[in-house]
Amino acid sequence: MPKPPFALISDLHANLEATEAVLADIEREGVKDIVCLGDIVGYGPDPDKVVDIVKRRAAVVIAGNHDWAVLNKPHGFNPLARNVIEYTRDMMEPKLYHVFGKTRERWTFLENLAAVIQDGDLTYVHGSLRDPLMDYCFGDRHALWNPAQLDQIFPKVKWLCFCGHTHFPTVIREDKVCWYPAEGRMEHALDRGRKYIINTGSVGQPRDGDPRACYAILTGEAVRYRRVPYDIEKTRGKILAIDAYEKVLADRLQKGK
View 1 (tube, one colour):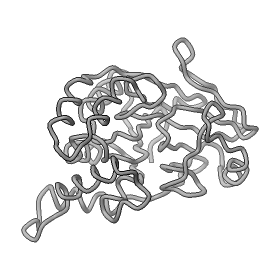
View 2 (cartoon, rainbow, N blue to C red):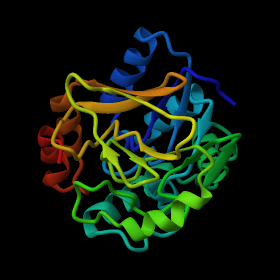
View 3 (tube, one colour):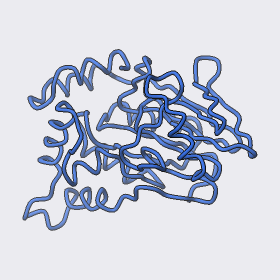
View 4 (cartoon, rainbow, N blue to C red):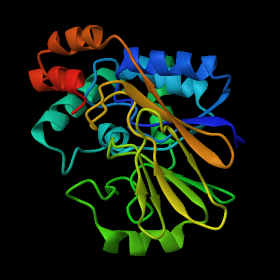
């Protein structure tokens, strides 16, 4: 298992350009190990390529709800997401002649992803420790902020619980104090005497109003967020060229919504 410093990426959503930009930034930061908190696929145009990158580069990988849905059924997904999941499954599911090769390797890789990984006092999950795949754990700036939910989750946290799923970078302390990264304040100190839920934001589809890719680095006693610009128009063009994808999936990337 990786030891700090290491990078945490989540919700790549088949966005190759954002993923490559983040990996280049991680290299410039001198960080070697990467933890991926799921949703490698979904929404974006390059699921196979992004799976290959994560499979090759990440030391720890968690299953996201979109990864699970590709293997199973997209229950509870809105029509936009469901259409992409069906398209992704058609592209990536091994056929009878895929006994060997990359298609089979990608599928097997997704099948073997864990829902939760515990490493000492560090926990990795996509949603939350209440529901690893589907539970959204928002901070207090969001309409779905749920303090009662946190009362159920924090007893399961040993020190740091890293998650994704919401696409909103947030640090939530056990006393329900929330912190959000912003220009000029991208690093947050972590007290050993406190527990934290740390959402790393989204690489491939940010929703906090900043269209730049987002990821985090655990430096040891602090978490540092990074925002990375990427070629949004290239990704948009790929999405618009796929008949199964709605235009909104391309346009939302420009706004970070």
